[in-house]
Amino acid sequence: MYFDLGGVFLAAFYSKELARRYAKALFNLTLDENCMEAISSDLKDLGTMLTEIEDLNNIVLHPVLSISEQKSVMATILDKAGMHTLIKNFVALIIDNHRLFILQDAIREFFEMLFEYRKENKVLVVSAAELPSAQYTRLKETLEETLKSDVTIETEIDNTLIGGFKLFVNENYMVDCSVATRLDNLHNSMKGKI
Image (cartoon, rainbow, N blue to C red; front, side, top):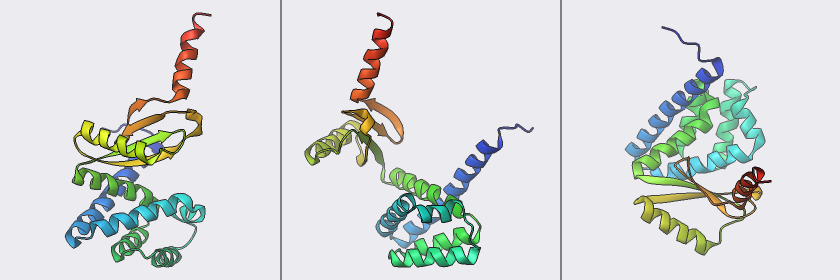
C-alpha cells in the first residue's frame, strides 16, 4: 500500500532518521572510546559554529564544492578548532556518503541520546532579558527538585516577551509567564466586553 504524504514531509522524515543513525553510531563509538566529555564539548562547539558562521552553514546545507573540496575545507576548520579525531572522522564519513546536509540534525540527535543516557532533562528558558545568576541557580534547583532529575538549562533572549519567561522541558511547552502573553490574554478577554 502506498500513501502520498508529500515529498517535503518524507524528505524531512528521511533526513531525521538518517541523522539519528549517524548520531547513534557516533554515540556508541564515543561510549566505547570513553571520551564522552570531549566529544560532547566539541559537538557543542561545532553546532555553535554552524549556527553562527553563515559561510560554514552554507557549505553544509548547500554544498557547491566537490566531495574532496568539502573534506578539505571541513578538515581545515575542524583542525583549527582543535576538534577530537572522532569528530573529524565522523564529518569525513558524512561527506564521503554525500550526507553533509544532515550534520546539524546529527548533532541534535547526539545530544538527545546524551540527555536520555544521562537521564537529564533539557530545559530552554526564553526570557525578555538575561537571567541574573541567583535567579538562574534558583530556577535550576527548583526544576531539578520538581522533575526529580538533573537539568541542563539553555537560555534564549526574546525582547518581544516584554518581561517574564517561557519554559520548555525537552522541547515541550511547559509554562508561559511572559508579560506579552498576559497582555494578549487581557486584550482578548476585553474584546468581547467592549
